[in-house]
Image 1 (cartoon, rainbow, N blue to C red):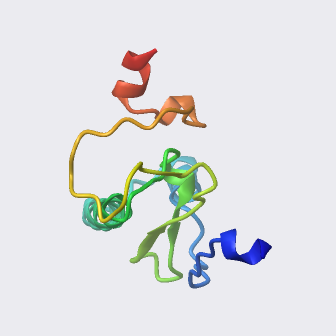
Image 2 (image 1 turned 180 degrees about the vertical axis):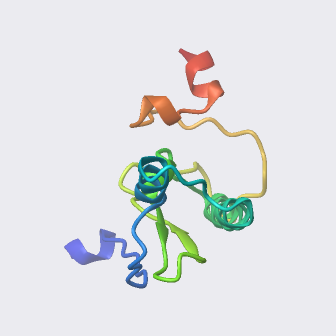
Image 3 (image 1 turned 180 degrees about the horizontal axis):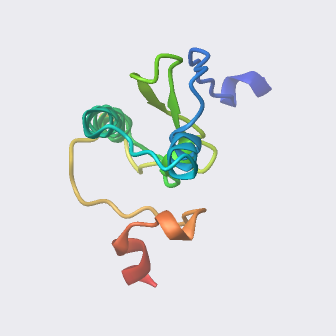
Length: 118
């Protein structure tokens, strides 16, 4: 049964675009993003990453273009898990040092440890 190996992720339709588009629009218009909004998006992103890691999922391509905003631009959700990898072993995974081999798809957003590993 081919469907037994398929994984699905259901997300709400987020009509606010992505964070990269918002940053580009603000820069183009000579505006600055609200520090309160940035702090809110940052906290939400950290909560989302914590949940993914606890479930044994490494996103591996986290960048502003993969952070999607609700229409009111207050809620942010992590998207595009096409480069994600599962951590080895059974979950849930507490915070620990685990190495998952493979390339991160957007070098300019790679964490330092990826560059150090060579």
